[in-house]
Length: 331
Ligand SMILES: C[S@@+](CC[C@H](N)C(=O)[O-])C[C@H]1O[C@@H](n2cnc3c(N)ncnc32)[C@H](O)[C@@H]1O
Image (cartoon, rainbow, N blue to C red; front, side, top):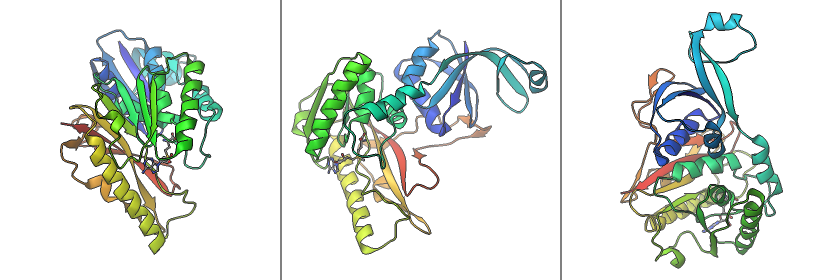
């Protein structure tokens, strides 16, 4: 079976998500072509594209390929579904699954507890990060900076046990409501454990658990920055303390991970008038935790070898805080 995935706004992140989902479900595939718009693959097994679509956050449509024709010929044929796969060829076939945008909106707007709109983690990104964190052995998902529980909601919908903590009591109470709402709204079991904790230290609650836990999290990114960050003493102090907080969290979180389990974490960078401030946290050595690039290094993207890709940026051009997603694995 040949499938074309139409990719969202961050195509490499979408491709990494597809790789991770396929690996966690033991689905073998080979890539025929990949560019900024599509991932075109050949699959040995028959899978239900609508089930895949429900899992993925970074794919907007899945298309089954019936035949390949030249782009010139394709221009002459009307009333067929077609996708250009390179400069010369067009695929025609059927759109078999579409992303349900309304479902993302419903989760963002209707969940009972929110923390204000500024800088909210989009549900789509939460879903992509979750999928990057899941391996075939993952049994539970932990978010140590859970906020309103956006990541945990996605994990519950996919049938995982969820564990969440935050330094703020309101977040613990609020996320409890959000998870209850999710379980009722999506008809899934609410297997959750939430508690108060400072992510810089190891939560006692997790010391004796023997399941395979994946950690997926968006740490505190600082107060909402409304204009380019000026490098005054106060701002540099805030940014340095975020940097230290993230480094300490990663060090203590490592102890929870079993071998081959992952930590998916956003590390922010900050736009100033003239440059970007990157945190030291993104390039520290964390002992037996290594950054992994989910997409193979020899992957051809836009006809060029991709090489090692250890992080993915996700931000709008004008954003002051830039989210960069890292995937670490314990070894
Ligand atoms: C960017 S928000 C996370 C948002 C979350 N992804 C969501 O879906 O709502 C960061 C959260 O980290 C919490 N926080 C800040 N410092 C913390 C710390 N040292 N330990 C644990 N949580 C902390 C804040 O209370 C806030 O809820």
